[in-house]
Image (cartoon, rainbow, N blue to C red; front, side):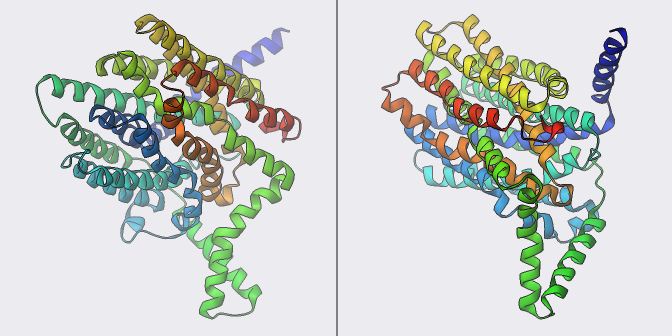
Amino acid sequence: MNQQAERSSNIISDFIESYFERRMARILLLGMISGFPWVLIASSLSLWLKEEGLSRSTIGWAGLIFGVYAFNFLWAPLIDRLRVPVLTDRLGHRKAWILTLQAVILVCLLFWSTIDPVSSLALVIGAGLVIAICSATQDITIDALRIEQIDKDDARGMAAGAAVAVVGWWSGYKLGGMAALFMADYLETAGVANYWQMTFIFLAVLVVLCNIGLLFIPETGTRERAEGQRQAQQAMADRMGGAGPVVQLVSFLTTTVIEPLWSFFRKNGMQIGVMILAFLFLFKIGEAFMGKMSIVFYKEVGFSKSDIAIYSKGLGWITTVVFTLIGGLFALKTGVVRALLISGIAMAATNVLFSVLHWVGQNELLFAVAVIADDLAAAFATVAFVTFISLLVDRNYTATQYALLASIGTLGRTLLASSSGAMVDWLNGDWGVFFIITALMVIPSLVVLWMLRSRLLPQKS
């Protein structure tokens, strides 16, 4: 018994120590860069449109721009293969793409700062779509660079890295959102007419600072990966018995697109592979429906931008960081599949708290309790979810396969959740019933996961 307790204590101690490794600081920054664009196209855009008098349905349908996250796997092979002139040789393949896409996001932010959403709604949504495309595309390389910071056989490092990546994502989203809301509230109080436009200039500065930090993240393996891809393409061309342009094109497409996708089903089997994809698709739909309308809900209940910044962003960030770090250990000791089952049930239960908040009305204590509980459940679920996907990835096709699996997970919660505003309108603004419906949405995914629990490899369960 003492030996078992000592062994468990050593596991916990080693796991905690892994959080303080230098590679985790790099993963943290990558997570922040990945999460920050959601401040722009989720919180800030939604509240900007709300305060300009646009309807809940319009705001909800504007969320269709998130749909690009569900399809980034389609161009992931090209991002994994095509080089950025000059920058790839100087900075590395992953960082070259991230910096290029961040530059486009910066231009879109500056464009937002010059237009009015009421008279130029199409332009606002168009720029938001470009930001979403760039964000979804950079996630391909961010996730690959993050996974490649950890040795493929390092289960402890993978779980810790997943937790830190989630902390980084939520830090970029929560702290960035808090900064945006405080800045918008301050400028509005100061009497600045176009306070949201000025806020976007402030957010542009944060984008620049993140990119400066990115330059200090080391990247290795660019030349080796490119040479391996070239050799695989040449081997395929040789098997096809030719060297002409058609053969080269077909061999390029086969080794770049088809082989990475097929290797997933070859590794897991067709039936289990399809069930895994079904689970990824369904798991976070309820959370997405709630999250898409949360800012609008808080505003309609009567909370100010500063209240939302303090409770939803600031307090939510602290809760998310603490419980995400604990969640990494929870996923390692409990097993990823069991952690997903438990956290899925918790996500559903915490959604009901927002129904209670609607029925009670504006109550800061209940608001704080609901946010803490929701972020606790979301933190555990997200760490387990990211760890689950990371363990499924074939290191030979890191960027493409992770993008595929993450995209399937995004597909349900972006395309379907875009109807969240229309659902609230259909319910005549009955937020209580809305949040109960979002709680029930998690059940199908848990049924699929329960069927999978004994059929996955031991390290994934």
